[in-house]
Length: 367
Ligand code: SF4
Image 1: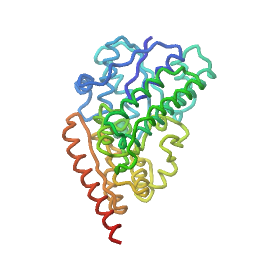
Image 2: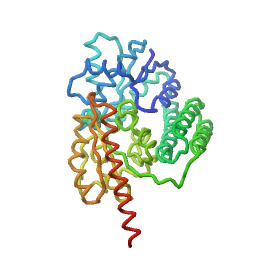
Image 3: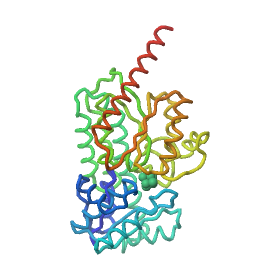
Image 4: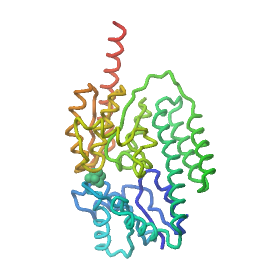
């Protein structure tokens, strides 16, 4: 039973270890390409959100490669994510594929269902073995996210363009190859961080500070966001991102990597949006308020066309921008979006941020 799952940023590095620890063979879908997107578009409802379309493409390509068991996360709404697995199953059945689908619903839907599903993924393993593997997976996932966080922060300072990306790839390899055990993961994390910190930097270079908020899949999957973070880093922008994979999955709600707990996010969002609207809607507002309060130069929101939670957030952000005097760029992405158009809008936004920065500095000098 080779199992598979859709791509989501660096999540596959952790899932490979976890599925191996569960005693299962796996087949990764090929990397996301235009073909993946085309397959998803051809077989998905037109108004489905972009992540559903791409994950359908992932599953088709993995099934073609020989996978026969699909693992998908579930959800409890109110956004459409909770229906993804059911829609994917129906579409793939209609296409005639023969497969089993395992939907990992969140514990909020009942611990028994959650544990029974884990046992289906890891047959023959004790609950203790499963819990130990999950703990290690979080350890490795957090190590990967910690490295990524530093890359986003420091890429803007690199002396040689591309050096941070090169170090990041090497760091991910180190973490990928680390044995699935505590000490090995900790050592790999130190080595990986060392590679990123070792990149020669110009720390005196003026850089912009930008927060990136929005829908998690668009923030975490470079194929769909055109690797916008790398572009920004090369354009002299130091980034703080609202979502990391291990924070998003973690049941603790403490957001260890991002460093801002769910409680703080909700409190910050409350004057504008004081209840959960699904997805990252409330978090988008809360993070924007927090980034504005920390003196960031600007905030960029990314979300897929027809995404309900972040569309709600988008309608609120102009007020946040006025109240805190911070520029906010909302970018809606769908299958028609092209990289050139996206970059053009970003260039204009960065020009605005630099000119505001210069005006502020002039004002300070004249005081
Ligand atoms: S958060 Fe938005 S894009 Fe993501 S699944 Fe929900 S509706 Fe779709």
